Each structure stands twice: as structure tokens, then as C-alpha cells.
Length: 339
Image 1 (cartoon, rainbow, N blue to C red):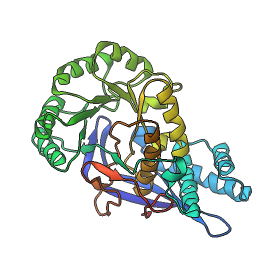
Image 2 (image 1 turned 120 degrees about the horizontal axis):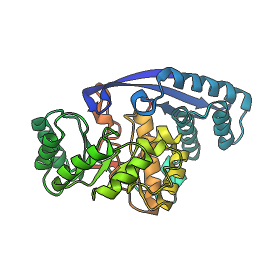
Image 3 (image 1 turned 60 degrees about the horizontal axis):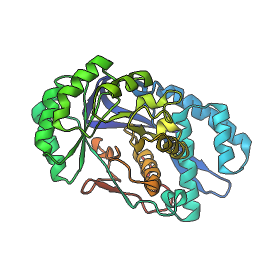
Image 4 (image 1 turned 90 degrees about the vertical axis):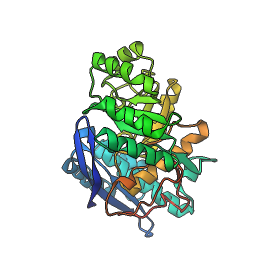
């Protein structure tokens, strides 16, 4: 287990505060033959309430549990970890490492183990980090020139109306515009905000309010498509059909295996799943890409929020978006180099 720190090139300002850097825990699982796989744990306390030290304790328990297991099938290894500590963000690291190892052993990318005809590339959104209207407009114009088909802008902060209007003007009329409030609004406040912003043309609004009851109440009052993110952790949320779409993340689902299962519940409810990162490192983003590529077999996904490695300073973006799309790694395993 190794700590890694990644600094954002510019702070990402959200309704719950600004994010300046990300602390990750990198893990490697190696069996008696020397076969190995890399995983990554990416807790984000303001998002999931899990701090780095809590995740480290879970991973330490997993190391003890795995040492007692021998080498049973991967599913039993993951269950041993779950029994030791059922912390999703830490389980995600083990799950990623197991899939990476399985891909390396088979000589196939993980997406090819998950499905027969996974997508080779995925449409992704650009994330705007500008905190004032002029800069938001310029960022949006740059994203449009780069070929992105969807923009995501944080709201529930200062001067939302001006920034969203500037982003729409900079991006042009054809660009999908997605907002993310991170649950900042009450139902009445969300209704007022969305009625005001809807004429600008919104693809969807992510987590405008928090909690299933609030989501259901808001959906009855506005015509904007609603997605849940943090609320998806609530019991029964995935199968509730309360929202039009559900944002799925490896850290909350416990890895690739859990995300695939969660997507099935979402689709059965009539809602659309899509996949995003919690500002993960390259291993986490790669795992999410492979999972999303397999999900495409059952139907198209909305733009995924996986073009995030470029937000960091001082690292090479191993998974860059080209023309608004990211190629799914074709190398065996997850197909990226850990930090």
C-alpha cells in the first residue's frame, strides 16, 4: 500500500468546498507465481465521508485476510476482504487489482473479460473549473473546439446564472450542458434555479437535491432531467427509478464488479446509468472506462465523466480525450501504468 498525492492544476470549486489535491492509496496484489495486478483506493471525504486513514485501516485488514486465504478463486478473495471490512472505496482497490491481474494472465484487456463486444471508445464530458463567467465562457469554447459534445459545470456556488449562461454562449447551441449541484439545494431552491436555467438548454442536472424523497418531489415540479450521484448510496436508490439517470462510481460501488451489478439495477428501474470518476488516478479511471465499455453492449450511455486526469498538474494523462472521446486501453489488464 502506497500513498500518492496529486495536485489539481486549478482548484475545483464545488458546493461543499474547493478541492486542491487528491490523496490516493495504490495497492498491488501478487500471487505465488509472480502474477500481479494494480489497484487504487480514492477516498474523497467531502463526497463519501471516508478519510484516507479509514481507508488505510480497511486495506490493512484486507492484507491480513488475504494472507490467511491462500489462493482461492478471485471471488472468494474479494469476499474475504468484504467480510473483514465492507468499505466500498477500499474494496474497489482490491477488485481493480484482481481484474488487472486476470487481464494480464489472459493477455486481454479487462473490457474483453467483461463482455463479448465492448465499446472501443467512450464519449465523455469536459469538466469546467472556471469560477467566473468570462473564464467559464472561454473554457466552454475551448472544449467545443476540442470536439467535446458535453460540458459539465458545478453549480450551487456563486453566480451560477452568469457562469451557466456564459458556458452556453461559449459552447454554442448544440453542446449538451450538464450541471452538478452536489445536493446543495433544497427542493424549493432547486425548483427556482432550474426554472431559471432551463431556457439555456440543459441535458441534465446531477444531484440538484439530496435524498430520494427530495428527488421525487423535485422531479414532479420541473421538466429538466435529473440524475442522482451521492443519493445513489441511499438504500434502495439504484432500483428506485426516482431519477432519470444515475451516476455510478467505482469508489461507491466497490469496484468494477459492483458497478456492473449496480448498472443492471439502474437499467431495470427504467433509468440510465453512466460512469464517472471521483478524481481518481489512472488506475481508477481505466477501471471505470473498462466497466463503461462493457455496459455499452446493453445500450448507449450518456456522456461519462472520465476525462479528469487532465485536471491534474505534473502527471502525464495516459487516457486523454480526443475529439471528446477516450479510447479504452487495449493492453492486457487495465492497460495503464500506476503512479
